[in-house]
Length: 355
Image (cartoon, rainbow, N blue to C red; front, side, top):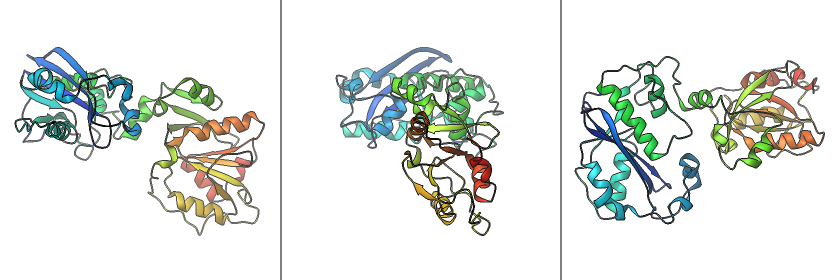
């Protein structure tokens, strides 16, 4: 525990705030009231933001303009409905330093309220992990996992739900319960992997799934077989913006060792990249071009192979593979860094000998 973080009192209010856009305009406030270390009530308000929603934030909390078009504004609610709860005792929020403290004050100042008294304590300070950097690996879901608090990832980012979960972990701390960080993922990528296991699709199931589901791309793990003759299905983390995410960039390709033989299996082939790799995307593209391949963005009937990272893969590209396979056009699949290494350094023929 941070030495400057007060110990939770027996009576406090846990809050959570969701916002609609990059300007951090509030669209939802949730809270849970705790008395004598018991949750006695919870509330949630949908709030009409000052301007439009940004789809990047809608993807997280799934709120849209339709949810708040007829909702009251923060100015309508603050004095008589929300503020009295905030005055009931200590205020706690998970990640309050980065979100609730700053966002609440900013939005209140914009409607003319200078609430200098408003101090929101951060429950992340209560649960610093010994195996991670400060404020790393101790998100709300991770803390709940470490404390055995039930957590429904499908309810995450609903303000009332998150406020209730915050209240539960603060109560646990006040009662002296110790977290068990064993088997709790250390970062968001690992967390998604662990939580997504129940949402799985195999190649051939994507197009139908997305035709019937307008959202939820981040809740999917695919299982893709590489065409190396072993028929091993590898997990691939799906993210709807796929290639827009920066690569990991943690390793360098040894260009002195790449397979530049005149008969290397990549020569003359059209290939597509999607997802994250340990190498820089530009370096992979350069290596393929040196090997005689042509790297393209979109998948078509002329595409020979696709190279898939093991996370942040574009789901639209997987659907495109399915569509081409349905037309009888086979696309070779190389999945993950190990397959990529084999392809670059002379073992690529195994992927192209099997269909």
